[in-house]
Length: 187
Image 1 (tube, rainbow, N blue to C red):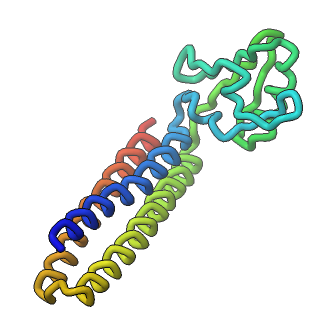
Image 2 (image 1 turned 120 degrees about the vertical axis):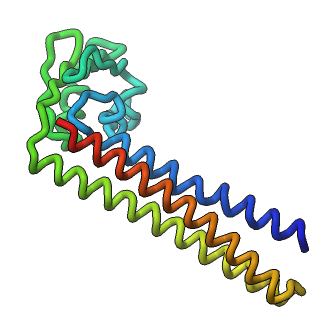
C-alpha cells in the first residue's frame, strides 16, 4: 500500500506539470511590447498542399526589441508568409522587402496592456482549473485506496499531502502570472 501511495504522489506531480507547461506556452505568446519569435508560433501556412507551422518554412529572428524578421527558405513563399501573418490576427502589419517579411512591433497602449493582463490572468485561471481536476482524480484515488484497505488516518494524511502539492503548484501559477503581468505593465 505504501508503494501505491508513493506512485500516486509521483503521478500527481507529473500530471500537474502539464497545466504549468501549457500556461508557460500561453504566457510566452502574449506580447509584452517586445518582439519575440514565439508571437508567431500559432501562425500556419499552406506549403505544397499541406498546412505547416510558419517556422517550418521560414527563419524567424528578432534583430532588436521592436522588430521581427521572417525569412522564407524559398523566395516565392514571401507573399504567402505575409498573408499568413496578416490572417493570424496578431494586430501586426507585415512589410515585404522582396527577401524578408519585416514586422514592426508597435509600443503597447495602456488599454492594450490591461487587456493582456486580463488574458494572462485568464490563462492562469485555466491552469488552476486543470490542477483542480487532477486534484479531484487524486482524491478519488485516495478514497478508492481506503476501500482497498488503507486506514482512514492514512487516507486523511494522503489527502493532506495531495493538498500540499496542489497549493505548491497553484503558488507557481500565481508567481508566473504575476511575473508576466509585471512584464506587460512595464513601459
